[in-house]
Image (cartoon, rainbow, N blue to C red; front, side):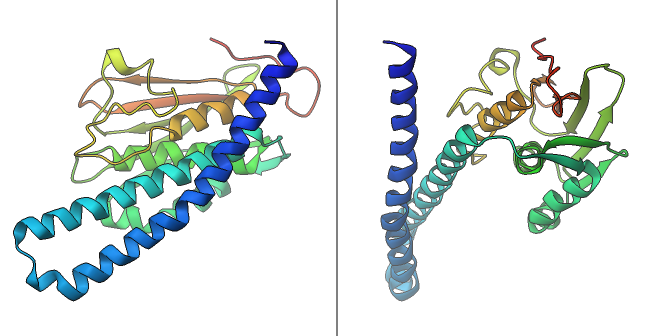
Length: 243
Protein backbone atom coordinates (compact mmCIF):
# COMPACT_ATOMS: atom_id res chain seq x y z
CA UNK A 1 0.00 0.00 0.00
CA UNK A 2 1.37 3.41 -0.99
CA UNK A 3 1.75 6.29 1.46
CA UNK A 4 -1.12 8.09 -0.30
CA UNK A 5 -3.41 5.06 0.03
CA UNK A 6 -2.39 4.59 3.68
CA UNK A 7 -3.09 8.26 4.44
CA UNK A 8 -6.49 8.00 2.74
CA UNK A 9 -7.33 4.81 4.65
CA UNK A 10 -6.37 6.46 7.96
CA UNK A 11 -8.51 9.48 7.11
CA UNK A 12 -11.49 7.29 6.26
CA UNK A 13 -11.02 5.30 9.48
CA UNK A 14 -10.99 8.51 11.56
CA UNK A 15 -14.11 9.77 9.80
CA UNK A 16 -15.84 6.44 10.40
CA UNK A 17 -14.90 6.46 14.11
CA UNK A 18 -16.18 10.02 14.47
CA UNK A 19 -19.48 9.32 12.66
CA UNK A 20 -20.08 5.97 14.37
CA UNK A 21 -19.41 7.48 17.79
CA UNK A 22 -21.93 10.26 17.20
CA UNK A 23 -24.54 7.78 15.95
CA UNK A 24 -24.06 5.49 18.95
CA UNK A 25 -24.67 8.22 21.50
CA UNK A 26 -28.40 8.54 20.83
CA UNK A 27 -29.40 4.89 21.42
CA UNK A 28 -27.23 4.87 24.54
CA UNK A 29 -29.09 7.92 25.84
CA UNK A 30 -32.35 6.06 25.20
CA UNK A 31 -31.17 2.95 27.06
CA UNK A 32 -29.95 5.06 29.97
CA UNK A 33 -33.16 7.10 30.13
CA UNK A 34 -35.48 4.08 30.09
CA UNK A 35 -33.32 2.23 32.61
CA UNK A 36 -33.73 5.21 34.94
CA UNK A 37 -37.49 5.27 34.33
CA UNK A 38 -37.78 1.55 35.08
CA UNK A 39 -35.83 1.92 38.32
CA UNK A 40 -37.89 4.91 39.43
CA UNK A 41 -41.30 3.43 38.55
CA UNK A 42 -40.84 -0.27 39.24
CA UNK A 43 -37.78 -0.34 41.52
CA UNK A 44 -39.80 -1.06 44.65
CA UNK A 45 -41.26 -4.15 42.99
CA UNK A 46 -37.88 -5.61 42.08
CA UNK A 47 -36.02 -8.05 44.26
CA UNK A 48 -32.31 -7.60 45.04
CA UNK A 49 -31.32 -9.52 41.92
CA UNK A 50 -33.51 -7.35 39.71
CA UNK A 51 -32.02 -4.18 41.16
CA UNK A 52 -28.54 -5.64 40.63
CA UNK A 53 -29.33 -6.29 36.95
CA UNK A 54 -30.57 -2.72 36.52
CA UNK A 55 -27.38 -1.38 38.11
CA UNK A 56 -25.29 -3.51 35.74
CA UNK A 57 -27.14 -2.05 32.75
CA UNK A 58 -26.67 1.46 34.11
CA UNK A 59 -22.94 0.90 34.68
CA UNK A 60 -22.56 -0.54 31.17
CA UNK A 61 -24.27 2.48 29.62
CA UNK A 62 -22.03 4.87 31.52
CA UNK A 63 -18.86 3.02 30.52
CA UNK A 64 -19.92 2.89 26.88
CA UNK A 65 -20.78 6.60 26.93
CA UNK A 66 -17.35 7.42 28.38
CA UNK A 67 -15.68 5.25 25.75
CA UNK A 68 -17.56 6.94 22.91
CA UNK A 69 -16.68 10.38 24.27
CA UNK A 70 -13.03 9.30 24.43
CA UNK A 71 -13.10 8.05 20.83
CA UNK A 72 -14.57 11.37 19.69
CA UNK A 73 -11.93 13.27 21.64
CA UNK A 74 -9.18 11.06 20.23
CA UNK A 75 -10.28 11.52 16.61
CA UNK A 76 -10.65 15.28 17.14
CA UNK A 77 -7.19 15.80 18.61
CA UNK A 78 -5.52 13.32 16.25
CA UNK A 79 -6.37 15.46 13.21
CA UNK A 80 -6.15 18.88 14.90
CA UNK A 81 -3.50 21.29 13.62
CA UNK A 82 -1.59 23.23 16.26
CA UNK A 83 -3.03 26.64 17.14
CA UNK A 84 0.08 28.12 18.74
CA UNK A 85 -0.01 31.05 21.14
CA UNK A 86 1.70 32.34 24.26
CA UNK A 87 0.13 30.53 27.23
CA UNK A 88 0.57 31.11 30.95
CA UNK A 89 0.54 27.54 32.28
CA UNK A 90 -0.47 28.75 35.75
CA UNK A 91 -3.71 30.15 34.34
CA UNK A 92 -4.23 27.10 32.13
CA UNK A 93 -3.79 24.81 35.13
CA UNK A 94 -6.42 26.73 37.12
CA UNK A 95 -8.85 26.43 34.20
CA UNK A 96 -8.41 22.65 34.17
CA UNK A 97 -8.84 22.41 37.95
CA UNK A 98 -12.06 24.40 37.74
CA UNK A 99 -13.42 21.89 35.21
CA UNK A 100 -12.97 19.02 37.72
CA UNK A 101 -13.74 21.03 40.86
CA UNK A 102 -16.60 18.71 41.84
CA UNK A 103 -14.40 15.59 41.59
CA UNK A 104 -11.67 17.29 43.62
CA UNK A 105 -14.17 18.07 46.40
CA UNK A 106 -15.83 14.65 46.30
CA UNK A 107 -12.49 12.82 46.49
CA UNK A 108 -11.03 15.25 49.05
CA UNK A 109 -8.06 15.71 46.72
CA UNK A 110 -5.15 18.07 47.24
CA UNK A 111 -3.62 19.75 44.18
CA UNK A 112 -0.57 21.99 44.36
CA UNK A 113 2.08 23.28 41.97
CA UNK A 114 5.22 25.33 41.84
CA UNK A 115 5.24 28.40 39.54
CA UNK A 116 4.84 27.28 35.94
CA UNK A 117 6.31 29.03 32.89
CA UNK A 118 4.70 30.99 30.09
CA UNK A 119 5.27 28.96 26.94
CA UNK A 120 4.40 28.88 23.24
CA UNK A 121 1.94 26.00 22.69
CA UNK A 122 -1.55 24.92 21.67
CA UNK A 123 -3.68 25.93 24.67
CA UNK A 124 -6.38 23.30 24.06
CA UNK A 125 -4.00 20.37 23.63
CA UNK A 126 -1.73 21.16 26.57
CA UNK A 127 -4.81 21.87 28.69
CA UNK A 128 -6.03 18.39 27.77
CA UNK A 129 -2.64 16.91 28.77
CA UNK A 130 -2.83 18.53 32.21
CA UNK A 131 -6.49 17.53 32.59
CA UNK A 132 -5.87 13.86 31.72
CA UNK A 133 -2.86 13.45 34.01
CA UNK A 134 -4.51 15.19 36.99
CA UNK A 135 -7.82 13.42 36.40
CA UNK A 136 -6.07 10.03 36.25
CA UNK A 137 -4.11 10.80 39.42
CA UNK A 138 -7.36 11.38 41.28
CA UNK A 139 -9.43 8.66 39.61
CA UNK A 140 -6.90 5.83 39.87
CA UNK A 141 -6.33 6.38 43.54
CA UNK A 142 -7.46 4.47 46.61
CA UNK A 143 -6.08 6.94 49.18
CA UNK A 144 -8.45 8.90 51.41
CA UNK A 145 -6.70 12.08 50.25
CA UNK A 146 -5.46 11.86 46.66
CA UNK A 147 -2.53 14.26 46.27
CA UNK A 148 -1.33 15.70 42.96
CA UNK A 149 1.77 17.87 42.60
CA UNK A 150 2.56 19.72 39.38
CA UNK A 151 6.08 21.03 38.79
CA UNK A 152 8.24 22.35 35.96
CA UNK A 153 11.90 22.52 35.09
CA UNK A 154 13.67 24.93 32.76
CA UNK A 155 17.03 23.20 33.00
CA UNK A 156 16.90 21.58 29.54
CA UNK A 157 18.18 23.87 26.76
CA UNK A 158 15.58 22.80 24.19
CA UNK A 159 12.54 21.65 26.16
CA UNK A 160 10.30 22.66 29.02
CA UNK A 161 9.91 19.64 31.31
CA UNK A 162 6.72 19.37 33.35
CA UNK A 163 5.76 16.70 35.85
CA UNK A 164 2.51 15.53 37.42
CA UNK A 165 3.06 13.37 40.50
CA UNK A 166 0.32 11.45 42.32
CA UNK A 167 -0.01 9.07 45.25
CA UNK A 168 -2.31 6.69 43.38
CA UNK A 169 -2.30 2.96 42.70
CA UNK A 170 0.86 3.09 40.59
CA UNK A 171 1.82 1.05 37.54
CA UNK A 172 3.59 -2.28 37.42
CA UNK A 173 6.86 -2.59 35.50
CA UNK A 174 5.27 -4.91 32.93
CA UNK A 175 2.52 -2.38 32.16
CA UNK A 176 4.65 0.77 31.81
CA UNK A 177 5.07 0.27 28.06
CA UNK A 178 1.37 -0.45 27.53
CA UNK A 179 -0.28 2.55 29.14
CA UNK A 180 0.20 4.89 26.16
CA UNK A 181 -1.38 2.43 23.70
CA UNK A 182 -4.93 2.98 22.42
CA UNK A 183 -7.60 1.28 24.56
CA UNK A 184 -5.00 -0.11 26.95
CA UNK A 185 -6.46 -0.53 30.44
CA UNK A 186 -4.12 -1.74 33.17
CA UNK A 187 -6.19 -0.80 36.23
CA UNK A 188 -8.77 -3.32 37.53
CA UNK A 189 -12.02 -2.65 35.64
CA UNK A 190 -14.17 -3.57 38.63
CA UNK A 191 -12.50 -0.92 40.80
CA UNK A 192 -11.56 1.93 38.48
CA UNK A 193 -13.41 3.20 35.41
CA UNK A 194 -11.59 4.34 32.28
CA UNK A 195 -11.58 4.06 28.51
CA UNK A 196 -7.88 3.45 27.90
CA UNK A 197 -7.69 6.34 25.42
CA UNK A 198 -6.72 9.29 27.63
CA UNK A 199 -2.98 8.60 27.83
CA UNK A 200 -2.80 7.74 24.12
CA UNK A 201 -4.38 11.10 23.30
CA UNK A 202 -1.99 12.76 25.75
CA UNK A 203 0.99 11.18 24.01
CA UNK A 204 -0.23 12.40 20.61
CA UNK A 205 -0.73 15.94 21.95
CA UNK A 206 2.80 16.03 23.38
CA UNK A 207 4.29 14.60 20.18
CA UNK A 208 2.61 17.42 18.23
CA UNK A 209 4.67 19.78 20.40
CA UNK A 210 7.84 17.88 19.40
CA UNK A 211 8.08 16.49 22.92
CA UNK A 212 7.72 13.19 24.68
CA UNK A 213 6.05 11.72 27.76
CA UNK A 214 7.29 9.09 30.19
CA UNK A 215 6.47 7.77 33.64
CA UNK A 216 8.23 6.68 36.82
CA UNK A 217 6.03 4.44 38.92
CA UNK A 218 5.72 1.42 41.15
CA UNK A 219 2.61 -0.44 42.23
CA UNK A 220 0.96 1.18 45.26
CA UNK A 221 3.69 3.84 45.30
CA UNK A 222 2.08 6.40 43.02
CA UNK A 223 3.24 7.68 39.64
CA UNK A 224 5.11 10.66 38.26
CA UNK A 225 4.41 11.54 34.64
CA UNK A 226 6.92 13.78 32.89
CA UNK A 227 6.29 15.47 29.56
CA UNK A 228 8.39 17.79 27.44
CA UNK A 229 7.42 20.67 25.13
CA UNK A 230 9.80 22.20 22.60
CA UNK A 231 10.98 25.75 23.32
CA UNK A 232 11.23 26.42 19.59
CA UNK A 233 7.70 25.93 18.30
CA UNK A 234 7.55 29.54 17.11
CA UNK A 235 10.41 29.08 14.63
CA UNK A 236 11.76 26.43 12.28
CA UNK A 237 14.45 25.06 14.61
CA UNK A 238 12.42 22.39 16.39
CA UNK A 239 14.39 19.55 17.99
CA UNK A 240 12.50 16.34 18.67
CA UNK A 241 12.54 14.93 22.20
CA UNK A 242 12.75 11.21 21.55
CA UNK A 243 14.66 10.10 24.62
